[in-house]
Figure 1: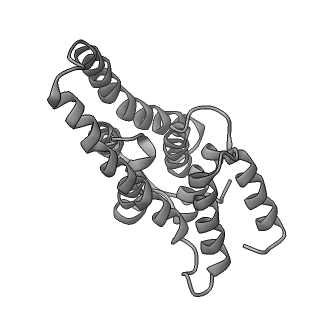
Figure 2: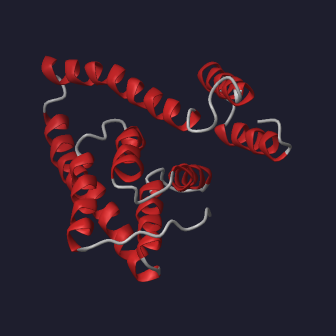
Length: 194
């Protein structure tokens, strides 16, 4: 994990952290990863609670680890807490981010899927599902752009951009498991090629 970035947080800061993830919970259409650009804006650019390296490392570790993708949010909260003062604060940060992101969306999803299943043949329900697809794709592209552009820029990191494009093409056009692509990317990174 990246080095600590010492910060001071008061009670209202923890409340702001919880509230921000609570508000993002209902906007994370297509999964929590689609809200990563706004999490970056809030945690790194606005509040300076995380460094850019800590933000990217949290997402990379969670995406490479087995289990649900939402683990990156726990890591973001954990790292904010570590920056604020130790393991107790890290647990508090993790609780703020995870409870914030999970409770509203889980409650809404439980209620709406029950209603949607009962009304699945309605034209409005089918139109809503089809209309959400481009929004989810656009949010995923924004997340990919954010993570890829956080290095030194396309002119210097063209091998990384080339690898990103090729990986996206392979995922789109083949059934190659994504773990193989992660392993190839890790090997190329370890060799210093990307």
